[in-house]
Length: 408
Ligand SMILES: [Zn+2]
Image (cartoon, rainbow, N blue to C red):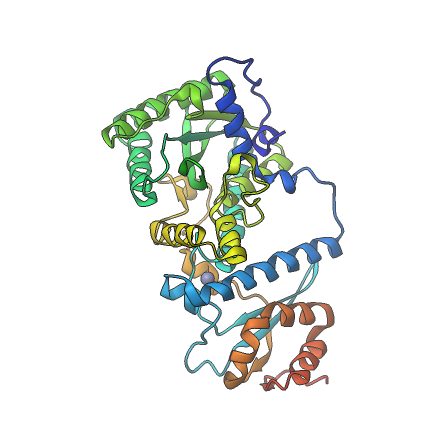
């Protein structure tokens, strides 16, 4: 069963007919968490820590490769360059329920939720917490939620930047203006948050909008589907104006109710915020229908150096640059008492938990920056003592802050 089916599972599968095959294909494309089922059993803290470290090491490895050939200057500097006058990068350590967590401060961060393997993980983590908070507030108020997915037709060779511009314009037509206002009143819509998912396959770039629509009371699937169809009518009209199209019974529209249970809310928050950067999604060889998420394109580009994949990645960087990944309807965050929305840059800059336990000598930084994941692993498994040993054994200079006694 796909992830989306697990999220809701209230809609019977189509019995057949014209759109059935396409719909199944679309479900498979979206249910790309197959390798990491969200319903896996409880794992120990040690297992969770190991998984996290593996993913972190991979993200750092990919970013360090992008330092050399990314088209984005900020990404080429992310985690590579130190801030002037910071006295060298700081190694930070904090205690969590899953054990020690290490991190670095005093380094430049790009804050790209689309193209930076390291920043994308941090930003998605924060955004998932916010989505979870809002949906929980809706559940507490007796409301309900539906996940509405809108897609468009596309052909191989269509420029991603053009498709994305059309998608943004079509979403504006869906969720603003008089007709949307009428829909809100008719269906009791509190608001929405939406994200964009992109994949690339044999028919080129494929963009979806995933909109989590929140209602002020219980809503039946039929009612949510009626709202979905009203949204889709505006979506289709706006795409036609851009000489594009979408067909509802061929996977252009999908509506699912979200179960308001704690587990389901965790899943939907994770789903809405992580579809865009599924680092672990399969490559072409084992991917369903050959559709790859952008980070899977990057993985293949790094593994094979194929010019086509490198060009696709650079097209992705250019088209996604400066676009917002998660957008909220006006007033929804305030309603849920979420407070001011932080920018992606603020999130990655503030993601520095714990206390600085040592400073790496600025002149030694170039020797450390390619092995950062190793240093963080050593620090998390053996604390400050192990961090000091790790650095000393490699001849890397460091100093301890005055208030921290050296335990070496
Ligand atoms: Zn970054």
